[in-house]
Image (cartoon, rainbow, N blue to C red):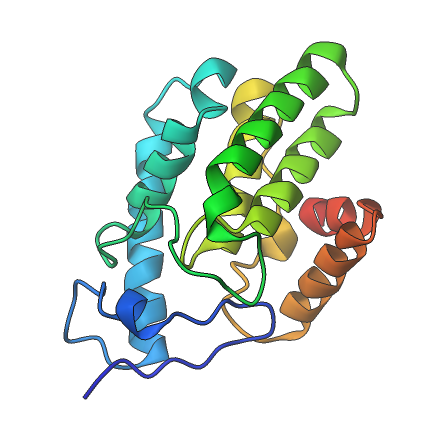
Length: 198
């Protein structure tokens, strides 16, 4: 029996080849997958806590990939690797490296020139990286962790609360989050900032 996944609003379906990247073959349900991924993510959080991170390290393609690998590499073979397929959201996969570098450069500029507040810089980065959709899956959780790392390690402020949810459940909190992302897509970043801080 293969892996049966139920996708929630805003989630990217995996293609069959990506599903074959599952390392733990005993996983057959969405619930089991969520559980193993959450354990892997908790290990990534432990890893981050022990690092002394500076912006020069955080704002690199290598760190962005390393973080995704730490979050998903125990569960998926493609953890930390850019996707090589087209998805229902995100850029063409061939544009990922270029657009990510533009985002990194923009973020460095925002920091150096204080273009936005620290909170807005972190949330703008989060929104843009999730829109690029670097990885086959896990982009939302990865982007939220990146925002937390930016606000804490670069600006020395408290991490975001994200409504105290990991947004794995298809509940009201996730609906508010997806709505805030869509508003950010249309140029209004404020609902996403508000969501992150609640």
